[in-house]
Length: 348
Image (cartoon, rainbow, N blue to C red; front, side, top):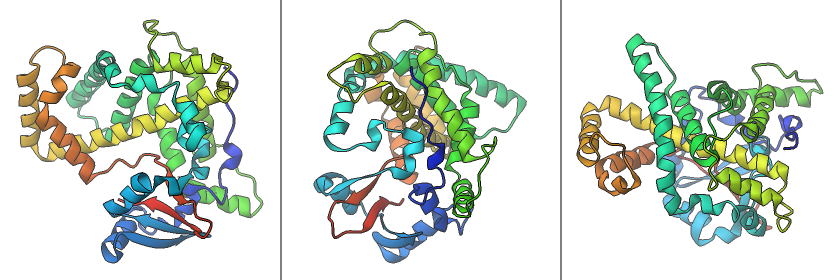
């Protein structure tokens, strides 16, 4: 594979979504608090001035439906500020190019593939449960989102890439946290405006992006677990070798892995962390989940066929997502109309 493209120079740019979010830092422990208060006070469409842009934050379900479903063609993605994370992966594209990049990868997400992935999900879960059992014995405190993120990353590497994780997921997670800390981007922006240089140190967003860029090449270079032919990684490699898809070059392949290792892990990690938090607060719900599992699959390993029978477990996950919608790097949408100078985003 070719060397990854560096996006460090894009950090601190005025267009960065992370810099644009700095006005929300009046409540440092939960920057979204102010948005939720505004939504409660002003309704489902909230115009907000952020830096030099006018943002319209949507909190009403009907507005989401208009932007994402019924009038989706009137809006395009706004992803300029997230290119350091995803590069040119398909999550940053719209229209025909998005479709062309998506098609070679789509078979990996066919419903029939789900049953093939479950054994690899379970292998990752068993490994993590051994770690949690030891933590329970020692009483050590851990950050649960870090634990669930590293679990999700292991699941994706095993199931989709036919790899054991060739990187330290806890270190990469800390880099992800460093990058998504809005204050780091504000500090870089202020230095850029002042004409100052910013050093690539261990604790800033620039170093975090260097580490992040090194992860996909490590995955490509790692030895396969089982030499499986039907994996997402194989499909991506085939697309690179296909002369009919010139857009799908080696850098595209690297960026696609970034997409799956970030956006593909964060939603799972957040949902699972909140579900564990809520069931810890409601032990009767946790006990009911255990009883349902014992009733459906007992001592054997669960399979895809058991999914429909786990009604209460599914309800807990769905309620968790209702209460705490996973805030993955889903793209902001911008109105296509030339008369519109506002950006449309989603608030919880």
